[in-house]
Length: 157
Ligand SMILES: Cc1cc2nc3c(=O)[nH]c(=O)nc-3n(C[C@H](O)[C@H](O)[C@H](O)COP(=O)(O)O)c2cc1C
Image (cartoon, rainbow, N blue to C red; front, side, top):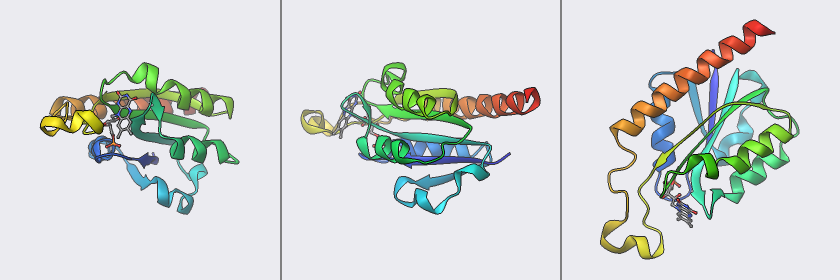
């Protein structure tokens, strides 16, 4: 099993911490978005796309990168961190984009992350200490589920 996570952590490194927690329990290579062109996505069983939420969805740099991909990975997963942790809502745009381009999205994950944007910087930010150990545990369970889904997909084809 070979997994890749392309991460665009735009604010404080919160989403990168989530990717790193996943990599502790999964054969997951982490690529920063800036370096993503160095990787051949078709060589991985599934590719994850993760980043901090900016104005209600993943940051435009990550969305544009996916939009411009000539070939999307057959299997993908999406993750994010945000001030509210509302990943169902926030991950939807990226999931739709991947699906429209023909990738099967095997899972979606999100949790709260420290936010020091604008007025939230007062007093050191909101969601101090997030992501925390519970978030890392949840991220690790998530990536284990993604791996199970990959195995199921392989055996059903
Ligand atoms: C410019 C900007 C816009 C943001 N917009 C939202 C938002 O719409 N909803 C939300 O819940 N959090 C929002 N946040 C908070 C970040 O998504 C949150 O801090 C996230 O954990 C950052 O992840 P990162 O450090 O990996 O980039 C915003 C933060 C910044 C800096």
